[in-house]
Length: 249
Image (cartoon, one colour):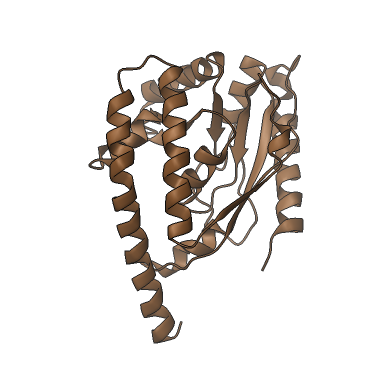
């Protein structure tokens, strides 16, 4: 990378972080005001806060978000939405732009970040991956989320994809909870967030339009856990093929 591009990328990332902090403050205050609400009202109110916040933040950092396939969300139904995972930007892109209130599974460590941690844990199901007890509790919380009528937004790759492959191998969790609760799985592909914060460059970023594409849901009604491997393979192949076909250089 040439020196000018390197410096420009670092300046942009500083700008992005400053805008994030400044726009987060009103969201933080609004989150404090809804903490006393019972679920699912709290999650629905928080989703509205996220929508306003990210519709301000993303354009200000020159990363407008475009959606496709929102019509696949049927009124009155909730889904297990499974997304690819390339960047830290994925969560602020996916959660607010899913049509309807939702929760995501999130690392407990980030909840300790000042100010942002409160917003983060209010909209998430926290899990300590080193604790078997925490993993079991998070699975119960995911099932309860679906029973409340909320969407569940999960990243079945488990961690950010730092490989050159379109997708990493999927873990079972998202598909287990979908089958257990007999909820349809909604595949979703996020494009370009890996270009905004490329993992190989460290403290460096660049603006780029983001796209979030929802694909036709796959029903799990009548499925048992014996069919989990086939369901997981089907969703993985569908997402892989769509990403390869629609990814822009």
